[in-house]
Image 1 (tube, rainbow, N blue to C red):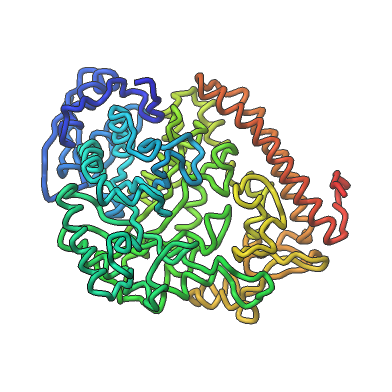
Image 2 (cartoon, rainbow, N blue to C red):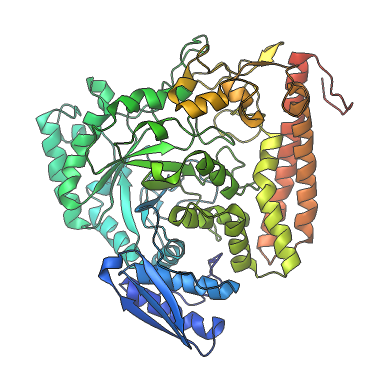
Length: 613
């Protein structure tokens, strides 16, 4: 094939369709790569059923041995090969994933377009039907297996016709696709429409209605006859216009449990997204605070969900912003199966035009939230039909890093990014260090020239690329900053909206006063005057100005650095073309945001830099 394998350049032969088990794939990969990576060495595989997804790698003279479960030996083969390719020591001890469910959520529509997709059209669909290259699916399967991902939901959570047919007339084709991914240890999942029974003569979708329950019970049986190892269903209900149990006066435990019981006999999981809020808010309403919504809808239901229900909770209480506090709901439900949800697709973080390496952000999330709070992990994928799968060649570090992070959330960002850089490009040490440093700093640079100090949003409405400081200020989505001539930000303490009270006491103390709240989240939790003095001695308005000018200057430096790097074609041309667009974006953010706050505050930049009027 002509499609690039990004971090697996040492695997040059396509996976034959005749290989139908993980062990066969593992042997194939080892046989083609070991002569190049470790001449004279041989590999030995031993299946240990009890290890399931785990593996152990050892070396005895010229024999490299991998022991593991049926899928674990495949994970072990990739771990071994990547260690050899990078010159790293072999992994020591038993290798076990932290999370049982390590999922990608694809937001692909049957039409072939992808909601918030920035890497071309769908890999799976086109023109209202399945349309894919089987060889490329096998290639994608090996990429996912190489970083330990084991579930992929292939369609948009906003289920649009005819994608509803994935659990009906499209089942034979779904089974064919599932068979392609099965040898890689990847199970498929599908997003379903909660109101599906109403298209089949059932007059309601009330989860307590016997006809509704019977329809889903029967449909689950049909689905699992076609795809016996389907991971389950993903549901977005009562959110942004999607149907759900609220229509019938039912809560989300009642809604989710009905579906979970239909799936349980087949071992299926019901993944239920907690992205539920009032998207018809009146901007004049100062009592409704959107970040409070998930907690209010779900926390009181802790312990009421079936054991095969997984609540999927976004990492922050808003919507994948460049910086948010950890969602308080992740602390509030110890008796419920929870999944952390990230967004690899850079909807609010540069749309795979601006460089934005995510591992440093994930590390911050987990530093605030111990990993044992959740048992599963999910991410909105950044995949598409572009030759390199992710649009920007550097966006692949996020897909790669997410897989490693899902396996072991204790990994440090620099280690993840360096491993991807070395595998992908094999540069000299100085060039490798340069690219690693560029990627490590990219998130903070982007944050500096976009939304200041935890303020969030300020993006152009609808498409979400580029600055519009008041773009959502008077709209119904509940994403306000309330800037006026004196102050900016929302008071979310006990004396304000009360959002802060949803957190454990330690976080209430940390965020509760402007003096103790970290600078980068001050305007998320507090409303502050422009002359408020930050922890570094600068006023808040000066900090806004300085961050934006610094972010723009850092982007210019990044562009010069990128030009000098010995990247191969076509990655270099693609990266430089996007960098030109990032430079324009960074300047627009800097000038528009600084001008916006200058006009409100009436305060000049202390350094006399140009701010437009």
